[in-house]
Image (tube, rainbow, N blue to C red; front, side):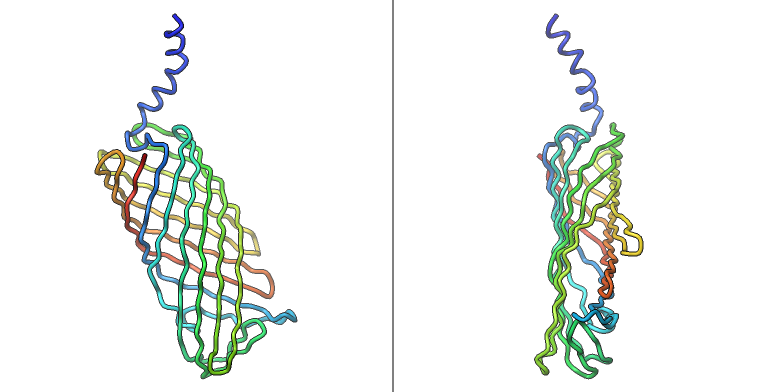
Length: 254
């Protein structure tokens, strides 16, 4: 009788686990994605006296070149549909140009016809708690609450004049989002979105869509498209960037 009562108590949870695709019955999941994004953006840094700086285009003014990067993701699933997710994307860009106009960045003026070298280094981190509101043999749909943290240093150097100026961005941003994954046989289609608007101070959002081929219940290959956009303003400073492009990689579950 005792065993029968225990079976009745656990039946809803057993049924729920059986309804999920076998690919979603895991405790820990890791994913690595190569990313080939295009970068566009604007940046401005005011002087220490509060004067406005030049609105500088990362491509037109600084000749920042597109470069590969990657993203690593990890998911800890406490029970079916209750997850803690995190990710990291490094940022490492460089540019070299002859300034075709005078640029005021912080307390330094980079004059026209002066060689200017630029580096942008840092990373974007994410952490989310996800609760799947619907889950069954077709997959799941859930809500996410979390945060993004951008850690980046922008450095402009004019070596011929010995000028150098740095701007540090340390920006924690709360986010809300949704997550969806649909299964048909060994193929799954997923979509994720997270973001927030801060009114006149700016906004942030990121999203991706991907298709996965599941070779086993533990290993999958993935390909998709990702976009990451941020805009922030704190007079007299301003930053806006957008990275978007195709991704490909693999996913392993335990």
